[in-house]
Image (cartoon, helix red, strand yellow):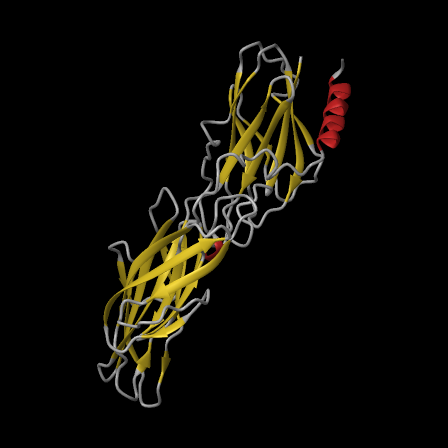
Length: 338
């Protein structure tokens, strides 16, 4: 069979597969997994905004309730997803979040949050914004000043032992190999010597992460000599730049950005190569750039199938939200044709 006919055969195979695939084939027998509790926060002096970005790893499940306590003696738990809380005095408080999924399975997380008392009238009110592309973050001072108060100095503390005076915007590169939350702090001082502090959690993720399949590496073993094709069944990405590559026995980018390429695109791996029997193909998905505020869990992939029927690789980019992870952000079908 010619290579063009084999390409056509792959397209027909892709059409027959139906293109959904993200959640189908996932294990329902594994039982309900507990949700993963997580939250972000931003404080200006004594006033803090907390935001739950908790997730549930069961396909189609979701976090349906949350309960906050703030470690300051408040007796009634708060149950909204994004509460605003004002502490009575400066100090470090142990903020706790408990979340539950539809079945009532729960988990919790606690983080220390340090707040400072506001300065007297005619004072600064520290605040800042932060945006990240992978590990590189830009911090911008948005402090306001009362009448009679004027800027004198600022100090950034990025939460990883690095500090920087003066500059705004301030660029900082974090070092992390997994999803990591840092607590950044800005302290500003006015001409009268009055100071104000703002703190925020900053979630960063390493770029172009090499991902492993559930249960091991994405290794596809060819039991017979064969040509191999890869086809894009579907995509539903929040990220951009999710790259699908083969690293062995050839090095090839299959899809430079599976999130934007046309569904049904077919690529022959290794050109016109006929791989010998027992060849092991190693496939990776490298996660693209995502807004860190909505990145809730490590990007991951699942692999099902075999040589005879072809392999389906499904990828989730790590964005949180109801029903996530749904494992339909990229669905790739790989078929060996002897």
